[in-house]
Every structure is written in structure tokens, then in C-alpha cells.
Length: 255
Length: 267
Image 1: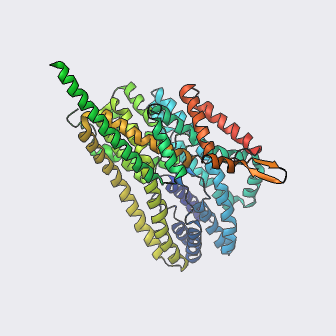
Image 2: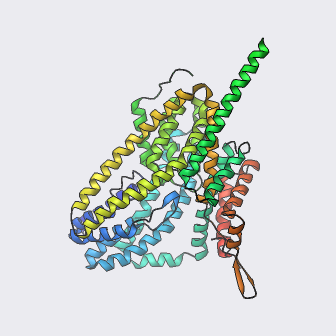
Image 3: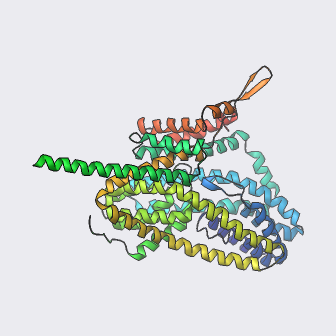
């Protein structure tokens, strides 16, 4: 790999990382675009586009909704294209790209746990009225995101592929499994805090309504919200009428 | 509050919209999800609304709370929240919070479907197939797609902002009641959020003779998402009633997760 090729690969890796979670215009993180740019720089546009298209089709429907961690096929493309063009086979590229995508699931969980600490750090600065630091530390989360891409891509393409497998083998199972369980439980903390700030005790019954609709009747979130809107309108009308009635009674008492 | 307050300029609104895009999902954390990105987006405009330090801190803390929705449609939600905040100031904090909570669930549902599943599948699919033939048309498709997405995203924030101002003018005097009504919508959504975002299950099995029964199966028959409900109730109790610090709860979750995973209790 020439210095220029490495520079382009690593720059594109940073842009792809930032596009995936940051500005999200679905351009630099697009597998076809990555395939095209890397193909251009590594001297084989056809292979680059072919790999980009293949991985794009593989990744269809693999979406990390609601904060779920899924294999990252964008990282896979960044690794697979240079290796395929240098090594001379599309299969070699895929064989190395896909394990790296799997590894990114663990990296993603660690990233999101680390972000929790940044969030509290930033909030502490807010409470101490150090508003400059408050916003500055939030950029750490962007740095984590970029590193999450840069480290595996650099390791796999520059240092060698075995190191990825060594890292995977080194981490104990209780830690990896424990992390994924923690990832499934931790949203509960945010929800509990939210409930703490809402009139949960006063309007407890509506929690049950939402729960039953989703968990028992499998109503999609929009459906649940529409029922919520109906209940809210109902409450609003009743409360306004009650207010008017009170006003009338108040008026009579004045006479 | 009969007249509209005009503290923020068009430039302020655009800056908040762009600041939202700068951080967005990078800041995703398990406890408050996209809250840090909301704070980053609002830091400048809130300072303009609240020249007083203490009010500013109170408003910021309001936005450090749990928030998550699809990032594109979030622009509209945040625009609306900002409009309410501009009009109502410090006494509108609950209204702002309830508006965000009420809107985030349903718009996440629509947004995830349209912007994460539908459009990427259609455009990505077309681009992928023409890429397999080595056609540069695939690149052109994605360039146009990216520009369209960018323009849509910028528009959403202003759209939400104008909508938010309408809410305030329309409900004016009854904003307290409106806020409480919005919180009812919010609680309904939270009720559905518990079984949808907390996905932990048990792997425990009972063996009686030759028959082994999975505990999760039994729990599902009694009530779906029983473990998420129990965990939510416990965490709410600890945080709201026992005033346990968030950091303590998170560390406990990490330790308990590793132990229960190793013992095969949770998965």
C-alpha cells in the first residue's frame, strides 16, 4: 500500500464513521460509495463496486434500531476492498471483512457504555456552570465513534488479520456476554429517570394502557401513540370543562 | 403570555439544527440515549433564552433526561420543543419535556421505517445492483440521495419550530392542562417503551425427570415482558423513592449482568 492509499483509506474510514452516527447523510457510510472510492484509489473500480454492491445487499435489513448493536457492514467494506484488490480475490476480502464487522458489535456496546460516562461528566460541568467544558466533552463521543472504525480498519489492513482473532480470543466470555446483557438492561435506567420526572404516580393507569397495547396486542408504536393522543384529548376536554364549570360556580358565589 | 416572544433569530434556529446533526447518534448511551446531543444542539440557544445562570442550568438539566427518536425526525421534535421553550421560558420546562417524550416514540416508529428501512432498501438496492455490473450510475444515485437527505434534515427543524409556536399560541392560557394531557400521551408511550427497548430474558431451565421446562416460557404465559417490567419497577423505586444515584445503579447493572450471564440466569 502506498502512503497515498493509506491516507485515503484512513480518511475515508473517519468520514464513514462520522456519517454512520453523526451527520448521517448516508453517503460516506454507503458501501457502494466506499467501494467506488477505494476501487479508484487502489486501481480496480470494478472490484470495488462489486464488493460494495455485494456487501450492501448482505447488509439490507440489518439496522440497529432503538440503539441495538448490529454487525457493521460499513467497516466490513472498508476492510474488504483493499484486501480484495491487493490479495486478488473478492473472497479474501469478504473472509476478512465479515469477522471485523462482527467484532464491531462488541466495540459498539463498549462505545455506548463509555458514552454514559461522558454524558454524566458533561452534566457535572453544567451543574458547575462550566458551560464551555460541558459542550466540549460531548465531542469525546464523536472521537469514540471514529476510533471504533479506525482501530479495526487499521489493524486489519495495516498490521494483519490475525490480530483481530487474537483480540476476540483474549476477551473472556463472561465479560462479552455480560456486556450484551447489560446493553439489554441499561435503557431501564433512562426510562426510570423519565418516569421520575413525569406525573407517573398520578397517571399510573396510562402506563398500563401503553404496555398492554404493545406487549399483549402487538400494536406498533405509532398505534400506541394514537391511543395516547385520544386519551390525552379526552383528558384535555374534561379538564377544560371542569375549569369552566368551576368558573361558573365561582361566578355564582360572587353574587 | 399573549404575545409571541421573539428571542431567537432564524440564524439561531439554523445553528441549533446543525449542532444537532454534528453529534446526533455518536452520543448514544444506554441511560439517557441521545440526551447529550440534545444538550449540544440547544446549548447556544438556551443561553440566549436564559441569561440567568441558574435558570440556564435548570433548563440544561431538563434536556439531560432520556431522549431517543429517529435522528431526522428528531430535528422536528427538537424544533417544536425549542419553540415552546422560547415562548414559555423556565415555567415551560415540564411542557417541553412532555412534548419531547410524547412525540419521540411515534416519530421513531415512522422515521425508522421510512429513513432506516424503506428508503435505504430502495435506493441502496438499486445502487447495489448497478454496482454489481460495475456501473458508475450507482455512485450518481447515492450522490443525489445524500443531497436530498441533507436538505430534508435541515427543513425538518424549522418545520418543528413553526409547529411548536402554533401549539403555544393555540393553547396559550390552557398550557398547564395541555402539558398534563401531553404527559398522558408520554406515559402511554413509556408503557409501550418498557417491553420494546428492554429485551433481556432468562435462560433458566427446570428439569423434572426427563422433562425440562424453560422458565421464560412460563413467564411469557403469565405476562409478556415480565422481567423488563420487574426491572423497571425496581429501578424506578430505587431512583425515585430511595434516591439512589444513577452512577450506582449503572455500576450495579454492569456487575449483575456479568454475574447473571455467567450463571445462565439472564441473557
